[in-house]
Length: 179
Image (tube, rainbow, N blue to C red; front, side):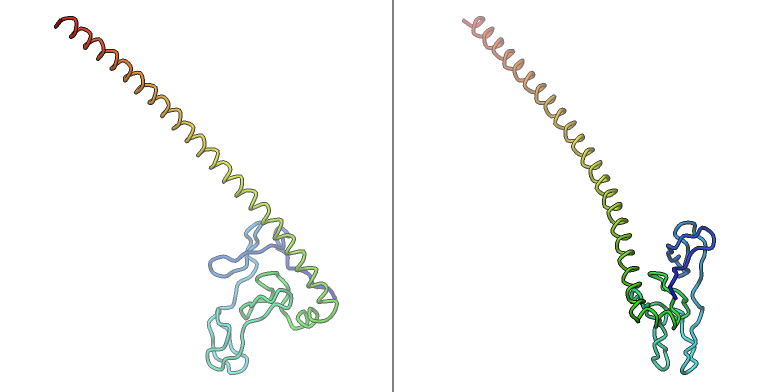
């Protein structure tokens, strides 16, 4: 028996996200896959617990399900792991803990890590490109400011030279007229 990841009925993708209500939705096309239960009834004492409860509010019984593949804690009432989509039924749990299941689980985890690393690499490349573009614009602004500062410096130098020249002329005229 082999475990199969769940797939979207609409597009066949096996990548899922959660919406704001906790519903499992397809990452590719947005199709609603499933939703959590409204209330969780404790199998030991019969107490109604909220859907996000991990333990019974009355007797403390664990209501959550631990994924046998990735050890993600899932709320009760979920059929597949919210992290890796592994089935959470008892047979799958037992299968994942025996030899071939462990191997398959390890392969699935390695595959997921490789996929995540590839996504991280793409994300980091995109972020690097964004930073490079920001740096290019910053350097361009600095070059513009430097050019403007050099232009202002030339104007100030020209005005100073003309001012000194006029002052020299006034002094020369004063000396010539007074003497």
